Each structure stands twice: as C-alpha cells, then as structure tokens.
Length: 252
Image 1 (cartoon, rainbow, N blue to C red):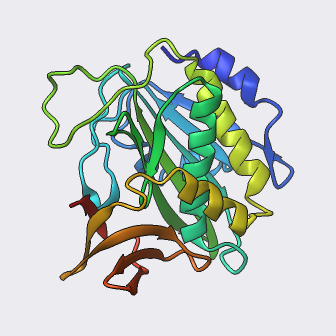
Image 2: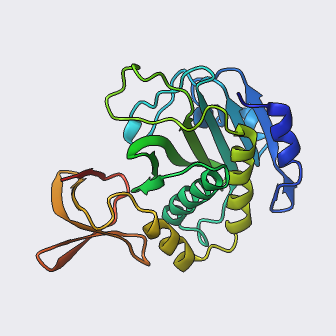
C-alpha cells in the first residue's frame, strides 16, 4: 500500500523551476488527469495528484484503463513547459525511460517499453502513460498520467493480457524516483541518450509488427525510434517512418 506520508518526505527536496513540487492525495477521483482541470488544483502547480482509486481512468485514444481500489498506483504530474524548447513526443519517451529506471531501481525485472508509452512486465502490460496539454492564461502545462498495476486479480475481466508488479514493493520510492528523474532531465533532455535507452528496452524490437496509422496499415520489422522521434519499421528493404504516436501496434 502507498504510504503518502513517506512519499511526501521523499519528494520534499524535489523542485521544478525553483518551485517546490506540491503533493495532493485523494482517496478517489474520476481521473487524476481530469482532476488537474479544477481551479483548486491549478493553484498548486507544479503538482503531483495521486490516488488509490480512479473511477474513470483512461488511456490513449479514450481507451479505458482499469484502476482498482488499492490494487494499482495512479498519479498525474503537472507542470508548465516551454513548447518551443520541448517536443511533447520526446517528453513521452523520456517519461517511459524514467519510469523504467524507477522500476529497475525498485528491483522490478523484465520490464520493457512498448511503443509509444506503455510498459510491459513478463510480456504483458503493467503500466501506461498518458500525456496531455493544458492551456491556462496563455501558458502551456502538461500532465503526465501514470497507471501501474500492483495487485489486479488474475481473473479480472480485461480485454488484453496484463501483469502486476510485486504488491510489496516500495510504492512511495517508485513514485519519487520517477518524479526525481523526470525533473532532473526535463530541462536538459539528451535526445541521443533517451533514444538509445528507449530502443535498448523496446518491446518487440527487431520483430515483425503491424502498425495501424489512422486507416492505413503497415507491416515490417521493428527498428525503433529515430532522432526525429519517428517509429521505424522495415519491409523489403524499405523503411517506413511513423509520426503519429496515436497509432497502434501489434505483433505479427
């Protein structure tokens, strides 16, 4: 179970743009990303909203994300960004690598990144990341929503294979390591380093996959992401580059 007192202690020294990171715990919300739209929450940015229970959690493309009471970690991190300096696509990749690093430091094994922003454990989905932007008084803020399975029952009805992390892991440490790594790198993103770390841990790397991009389908060997943040697949010697991170991918 998440120890919110311990989490606040671990986050006490974390700042963003010389501003202390505020932490708000809610017993239940519809969605931590949606909660950031409330005026009360906006007055606290940069802000971490965390809950034991999301009643209407969602992922990319408005897909439902299962978040059961005290059986998952659900949080959103919101802060102001300069979109002229930060490509939100790289923020998605950075978030994945920071969460991967936090899990590895928590002794979680066999963690892989599934393009564009899911994490897999033992070949099954264990975590998803949703990045959204907010425009407030002509300033741009981003919210990074994270859901992590901890103890979802094996017989629970979900339309895809899923996995859990160890329910006894230090949840406060996991969340604090993620926030610390993200804020450490956000203002000086090393794109080459992110791309290498992302590709080194990419699920289905060098395997044949199918990509659905709007109404178009592409098949080929998964090569990873390039310096422009595009996903690359190779088919018959030709390389197809995918810009749309809302595309979907499956294994052939």
